[in-house]
Image 1 (cartoon, rainbow, N blue to C red):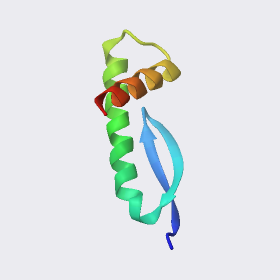
Image 2 (cartoon, rainbow, N blue to C red; image 1 turned 90 degrees about the vertical axis):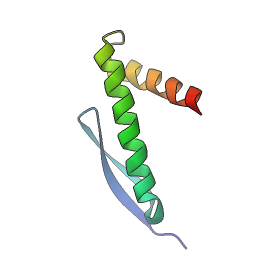
Image 3 (tube, one colour; image 1 turned 135 degrees about the horizontal axis):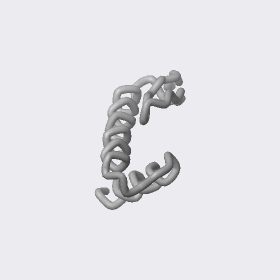
Length: 66
């Protein structure tokens, strides 16, 4: 049986607490770091304004990569 842990991640300088199985903590941290990098790249381009729009563009880009 898996134990759940709360992991604190930082995305675009905002802190989020996310519950996940303890054995998936490193994957969650890696995913959050990747998302943060993608969102920072989009924000830096200056073409997309607003956290929600940046998040949607990052989600679309990551979905396309997959």
